[in-house]
Image 1 (cartoon, rainbow, N blue to C red):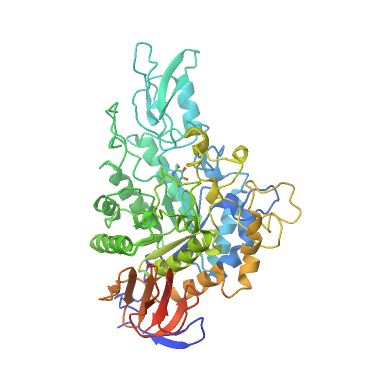
Image 2 (tube, protein in one colour):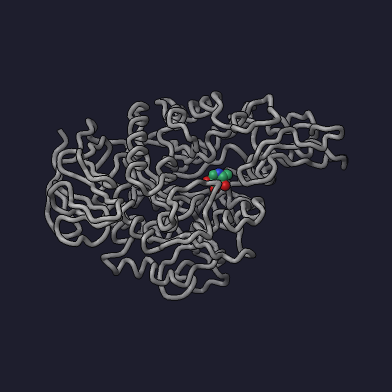
Length: 560
Ligand code: NOJ
């Protein structure tokens, strides 16, 4: 039996609760880790050029240790022309000079480990950069060459090859094929890119591609990386017949053969000491299909986008939580809980809109947002999320309660989605969740850049963020940062395991126990409700009026 552990609540009361029996004394770290996502260009700028970098990140590691996270996941840091903020990788074994050097990356891994923080890095296997030497060689080598076979080059349709080989729809809007000019100057073949033209798709049927990525995994595992977040993980394998029409995206999504890739990656991960982890970015609406990536010889975990997309609604959230727990239990893998990342509107904004659900390709920019209500819900959501069993992700700035910046001047927008989707103000892309963090002080760049900076932050920060800096929030016990710090500390003892919903709770209320002595209650209704069970308050997302009532959009952790 797991022994009870003594806990001091941030509200000052001593309490004792029994954590769930997990059957394992030493859980592998990734089963219940809190993983903090670093978007390096917006985290901290050490060299004053207005773009975040590894030197900046190094100086902020103590902040992350104090926040109480177990690991960081760093978005792509590789050499890249930055056509899609680094998701167009020219060299998978080099750091982009914008961010630093390979020596800086090695130093970062060492220093993070010394602070007890694991390091997960991003790997981008579906596509590369058009500047990658293999792609450049393919352009030069001509039709039918072995160099072209590593990608998807095809002649066009129509009399003169003027029509793209398929009519597939691209993720960033616009066509998925680009026609090249052959070395002899004639209009030539087309190549496939599910994202921007600067991101040609690899051909995963090719042995060179498979061998190359296994070698890249080893390169970083050898340097101490604790795992990989796998970009666009379900898209790698294509239907080689290339059907012209593909309305359901079946020709490039979740094909059976993609699982072989992850089986061999798992073997690579397991050939290393320590628990090295594979985390899939798998956007699939079907939980059963998603669970297949979690078979014991494939990935360790996948992001839970079903939870992220769900509206702030008790019934729907409960259904998503139940579904998530069920299919993860069947797969024998721990669930993950994600509220935000660098691709989605910030949670404070989402929850402040009338429609609180999120769809990645149907954003709602420009719709009215009630930031006060959104913040209140985001605080409650933080406690709900962190009370659930499994691992949890925190996207940088979520712990500061930052909102989506919707008024970035058009001329400053950098996300390729902005242009490719026809400059649509309702769906302007992802810049609004990527604005550089405010650290300290009352003026831009709010401590984001070194004091002698020679450039402004790469995206402008809202003036109002002076009240949302780390410095301001650290000094305020009621801030979002203080809430995250307390919650991350308390959740450490909750571990993996299951939840038990409380019976008979009023409509609009989510209430569950973890083990014998811990309960989480969240009121998503519009009225105050009596707490459905007695206990000592460990942490509340907002002030409680009275001892026994839970106001709307508030969550509480109880020792019961
Ligand atoms: C998913 C990444 O999270 C996103 O930022 C990127 O644009 C696409 N994959 C393409 O790599």
